[in-house]
Image: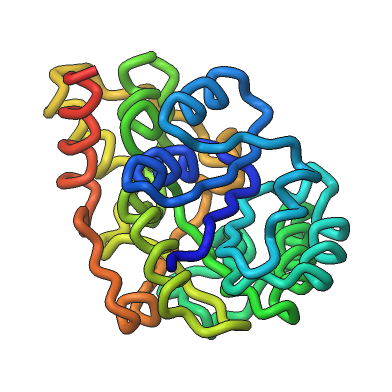
Length: 267
């Protein structure tokens, strides 16, 4: 019998997965603060519960925690999960923990706790790893309704004057597959980076999207005016994850954005 799936913090990624799992007949329990997501999830047969009710059902379940540290719940979650141990536990973290790291980055790359956001993520990882969690450090997530293409169409995209350094991304469906693979075969207490196989500069991505959509190139701005997550230059390597059997359906941004745009067009 397949263990129930408990999803803490159903946002963009976990909602997409929950809909698939629930329609397959699996028992899926979720938490969300968004009314629109709640309606969507319940319509697919997902049990959307208050947070404490969901936490009371974690023992023996497969649990995925996507609640960001700024919610202030990590200590409470760790305390509950230490008593009601899941059969499998996955924590969704971020490649932002590598901070100022440049070049090729994988699980062996030293983390950089300089920023408040990176420190918070690392503190959360440190709470869940001793409980047997598998941690996914995830590159920039994109997909239907989310990512560079939406900002370009909305006219809000900006790129650095220099063209920018390399950024790694992952399509939401590939991330869902990564979570599934790690739940099934990941090693407890291990960290896995998640990214596609082709990091690209912001200019490269913007040029391709502008040509594909028939839109003008976005304005160029000083690098320092952009969010810190857009100022780096690194290639996230997911070889450790691929060794578990994960293969991205969308190995680069061109294949991923085409799929996302086609889905958006279908509505």
